[in-house]
Amino acid sequence: MELIDTHCHLTFEQFTGRIEQVLRSSRDANVNCWITVGTGLEDSQKTVDLAQRFDNIFATVAVHPNDAKTVTDKTIARLKQLAKNKKVVAIGETGLDFHYNLSEKPVQQKVFARHLELVAELNLPVIIHCREAFDETLEILNRYLPQLSGVVFHCFGGSADQAEIVLDLGCYVSFTGLVTFKNAEKTRKAAKIVPLDRLMLETDCPYMSPEPMRKQKVNEPALLIHTARFLAELKGIGLDDFAFAVTTTTKRFFALP
Image 1 (tube, rainbow, N blue to C red):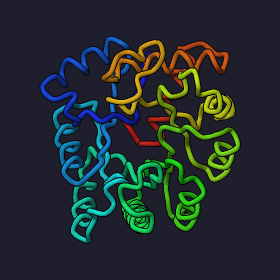
Image 2: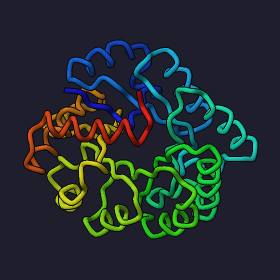
Image 3: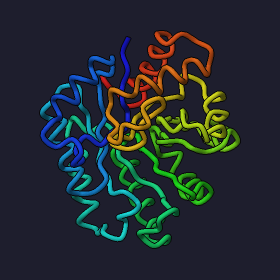
Image 4: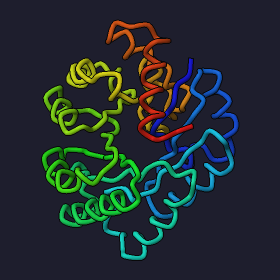
């Protein structure tokens, strides 16, 4: 069995000095490929550097919507340069976050559009962060959708109706341990309708440890197995068949070897 963590933050301080141990534990849980996601210019450089150290780590580059206010023309130019590295498989995470509003909404919207312009130019997939901004995210995304090669909504926590809209647009949906939470019935209903050729898995570590590991404060890629097992049971199929299907989907979406 093979699983891929499509969205983790291996450059974050929680993993400093112990990345080899984290990857070893991950492999022991049959999670043997990782996409470490950029959240800022400095962090994006770190994701690329880390991916170059390990064969099965791949990188993405972007500025998180919370930090959209820091983005300048030079930022976009540097992201474009970083994205040309052969280990970079997507732009992200980018989008809108109206929960914290750490950057003003109009600024987030402008920067999201600039990321999508870069996605279209480079012909890379894009990883969407959407929090309490579903309609606004779709309004901007729809302007660029015909030019985009692949779109995934990461850490999906929306309803089945929202999942249906995303799927109708040709986008993919990625689930974290959130789907295992006791209060996440809405997300479970969404997961039921997402076909396996549009479904991917992620930890979003170091955050959001899945059940039954909620007490583990620092989530790790190894815990992806719990989310995989939960979703396989939810869909009524064997874990091996589920893992094969979603791994195949992931490799196709990100053009992984």
